[in-house]
Length: 326
Figure 1 (cartoon, one colour):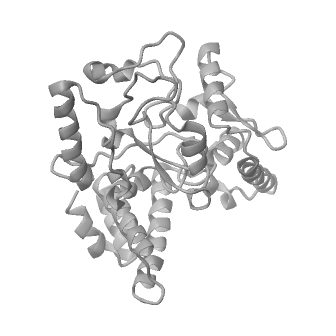
Figure 2 (cartoon, helix red, strand yellow):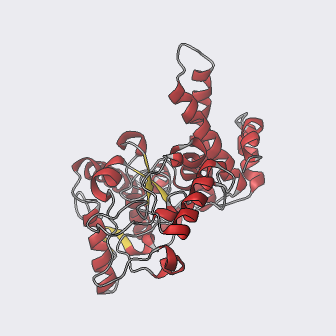
């Protein structure tokens, strides 16, 4: 888990005049009229402009466990469940957030469908916020960490000095906060999923090896927040060679190059009817939206910098068509 900056954009589907915006408005009107809680939620959050905006925010990495979404499968997760919360038969969940961009994160299938599901635990004795007191959401005593608002990079650590190190609570945390972090790590089984532990161990071994050889430049990109399990390389570099940590501008450039390269390959496939499919078309649109969102609201640098990179890759004119829709 690493800190994420949510872009200030409104994907068309979620806008007041978009299909999700209209559904949200209708649900609120029904509830305010007679207390009806919606029971059906069309999956409009899976549309390319929504997934693309989330990709611009976090790359192809699970917001919770750091897994590569290209390998682990990708879901759009509602941070606060849109429907009934597990174990609370009388709770309608956070239905009014079903179509709010601020409530979405990209998650791997394991974290979303097996670990989280409709669970959203609160501290013992804490009350769940409902629609009428929704202004109190920032004060809700939730257990789960929100990487767009919590200091996850300060609260989490990686015990890299041990073989096959584990993600742990920062030893400097106060006991109560440390227990909360431990609960979250257990909730998502971060240290109990062999495949992901193996990947982190491989990164750990490589980074330590390269630092020992004086070849820091060969591994510094592994600490980029948009790369899988970047906490491993980041923690080791922070302790041994902090000057080698990538800058926010370098992180952005890496993401731009990765998304651009993937888009170019997708466009080549779409130009060949024998290779293209509806899936390819959807994924190409997601990439176009992701690049447009980065251009609209860069997490670092300037819009001019984004435009230069896109122009160099021959994508500026194509992406600009999507930029105009944001």
